[in-house]
Length: 449
Image (cartoon, rainbow, N blue to C red):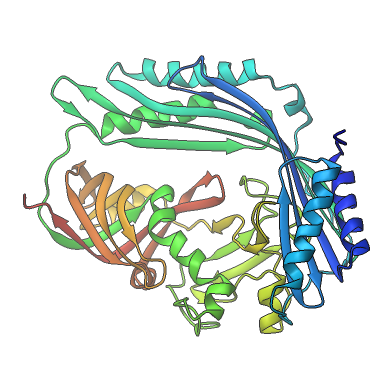
């Protein structure tokens, strides 16, 4: 007979069984989530499901083993514990392996769990999706929706180990998106994607997202070819993620630093950008969706200053990489219960600047605003090249037209050294809060075909 356990009992059973079967230390990380989603392509296409996952990590001496289950069934958990121990016994010892011990009591964040979310039904998802769709279409009859969604989720995550850590919290999540274009009898605009999210029911605003999407695709109509030039580039927050943020995230990851796969490996307390850049990794900032009170190992989240006035201040660590460098973990163990913990960013936040976006534009002699990018970015050396999507040509401080078939190429690390402006306006994305950023000396190439 199957014995179904609660999340708390599942974690407790895993750790107790591991210690009873010879583990030196053990850790259980469990997540129980209830999610409902409506697909915009067909408002009748909706789904709702509940998922439970449990990851079990054990140490036998300094050797590590890991196993996971996708149901809180006692019999499966016991077998998974035995598998983790078996794997640990045949794994090579590593003195840097450890499971963190309890320190100070963790203060749980407020504003990431909304009790009203308990009453949010699948019908509410449908209503939100319909409002978003109708708003976008009513903005202009040339707006065409390709896809989108509205998703609501309630999740509970817990870390319990044999070293005194036992933490659990609830998180409510809402996210929505629209993707599409503008269509006329003789042209199709560039695609645009608008994404937004919130933790609280009262902060759901699908109408603004729909209007922003519709306005963007209409404005992309009538693109023109422009000549090749070298000038300035303004990245929207979504484009910043693609061209710059992912490169920085790779470079500040202590595992990559230790593997000599980071451009920042020798740059602590030195300049990596102009003094306009202030960047932090902060899971305690509840305005972004990546907020939570503790990491994958049950270590308290905190605000980590990464770059301050252009100076690199630190890397992000989990327990393992912190042990290798003889430092403290920064609370950046991430990942799902299906895998062992790994170093990961949480909410990456760039501080707002002192200039309005319109001012940044007015100061450009020749340049391009990039809202999306389609191409390749090398996270190790920072080289990027691709096509500007949803871009606008700027000349003498004025937006002239949307651009067509324009290539952009450069290096993210060089671009950081040529950061010339940061906007007052910021946008909250799923795991980021970012302003518009302006960079000089960027190469743009017209498509000659």
